[in-house]
Image (spheres, rainbow, N blue to C red):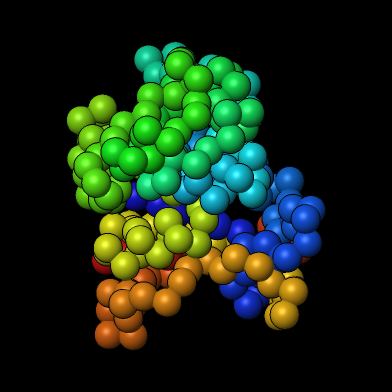
Length: 217
């Protein structure tokens, strides 16, 4: 499982302005597209859908064609984790482009979810949305490589659950301080401690941003 995020030096995923802050660049977007092309599913939280309105598609025609030639869909399965089911039916993710979307939620969230039939498969996983249940369902769908693209709450759940095999962190060359909004992770008991650190396997300059890749031994 891979976590991928772009952040400021002080760990913010965005600022507090209504306009999305760019923390990456074209070279890094292309790198992320290549990572997307190599996984079976891409997962985000409901907050990321609301804040970023992503499509979560493989953009490169060559990469989409290569997936099709390998017997796969042009883009990976798209996954949303939303305990409340509070999702905008007009979000680009549910516009019908790019193949199936699976929304994992609770029983109450499924009742509250306002998505049109066919926009997504809404799967209720009991009274609460347990991450382990979602991952088991994904495994049953043939998902072996999962890419998690945000936000901070979802990152925290995966790291705290010791589920992250690899972390791809793009760091922008500035700090946000008091203008910072959501953070990369929230306070939690993390197993990736000084006693058991992740291993740095790659550093790369991509224009003005830095890519850091960590792996779990």
